[in-house]
Image (cartoon, rainbow, N blue to C red; front, side, top):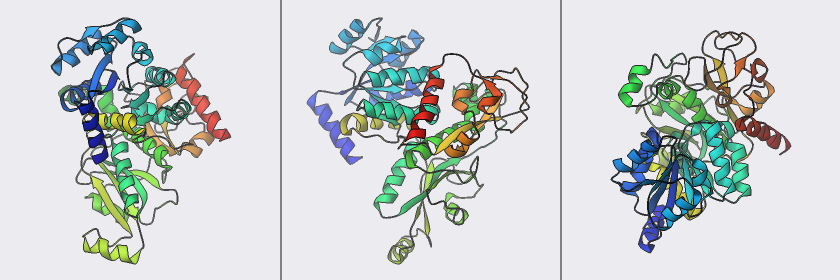
Length: 427
């Protein structure tokens, strides 16, 4: 963090700010934009792309920028960047293809549209930061392959739970412990929540009911821990993970002691104080370390609990951009062959002919599974599920497979998902 702060100060003093663009001006994009404009003088938010232009203009205005204007061509955007004016567009390809932008933040929470944005960004030699665990859990490993080939950074974000956990994993490793379990602190978990049950809460939070449902029914959790698993090589102890209900996160060292896996494990705790953030368990049987850690009130070991009691993705994502642009490094990104997958489960009894409504909907929820098991069972990833038509009845809480559905035609996400399977089958 000190190195990032110093590098940002040097960039600010040089008069050459990092030039950033955002795709998506919803809840996340709006707050990220505000943070960059108000708190990161070493960055310049040169453009926002959103399907509704007025929403993008309003995002700038909320941060005090009143002279943003609409552009409708690459030339117009390039001129705006050169003249240090702020631009909005409803054509994301302009942002992806126009020179003068160092990094793009993808903040739509979509799969198909976001995959197109990421691929165009990579093709045009720009770093891509995704505040989009949905996309990363579904296609992150193959998108990282493309980014590596283009010598650009593909990264998920600081502040979201996978990034928080990943930074703790680096710390735990740096002090000589072996990270063996990592995951989220979760306040509520009910796989049968729907947009109807979450509507009132969503309205109070100024969020979409589907977004709030994906938080409550465990789908977002499953995708976040798939992202973390694929960034570490960790798997799960069982489909859906253990998810123990504990009084405090410090009790996790006892719970997991007889459940450890050689390759590490992602999991979550329900209701454990402090109730928010992420945790990591570090392992050591070194007697000298054990005596010292006990003296410093870290417990008896051999599992030592580390946790961060908050996560602030919209506030921290500029740090991910800085890390990518200034240090050519990712906060959290797949390390190779996937180790986890977020698979589709029936939320209720489903009938042949029904169309699955995807993440945070009425028809399905996600569970995290080991990637090898997912492939053997031909499980349908939750990120691919939206728009799929069922060929047969599926009973409640049963896994939905590729054989059970008819995929929508000509989707990029399906092409990339197949490419991901093929690539990692060979490597």
